[in-house]
Length: 221
Image (cartoon, rainbow, N blue to C red):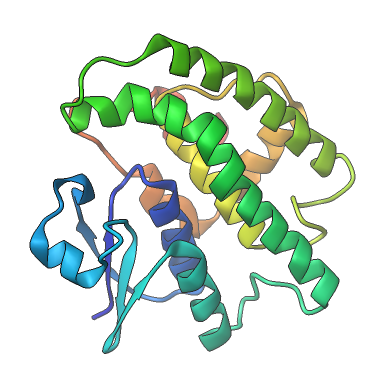
């Protein structure tokens, strides 16, 4: 059995979970409190991050490398386009969400509201929460501008770019930090992607002491 070491509200773990589910690859989920630096966990990935995928006899780390590895082994259904310029756009947007969006939004909102508590690191820092709340508006506007011209974020087909964005937004939606009224086109995009069978296990996630809002698992919001 393939095994994914993950944390339910890790957007990087969620991106890999979506990829595995979309490609109908069965996997056992093992929740990992990676910040505790368990020696066995660090043996699997000295970088001390999730996700880690045990795939056959291989241990795979780093979410983007895992997703592209799975794409090469299981190209159907495709999550990367065929043309080089289209693949570039997907990779650009994956990097946008996993780097810029994560730094400016996810780490500030999810990091302060949830991870500080589960890691016993003290109360949230209000300045970070306010900065994240401001930044997410700009990112939602950027997504709206893309979706005004395209069916999906990177083009006319759903790709890893959509999974990267949805992974971050679903974590933030779990704590009600996404204003879905800001853009109807972004809301429609998210409703479309979270209605996919691949999304079901994410919508069933539960974090002790943090209950999701009623709309979180509602496919029609």
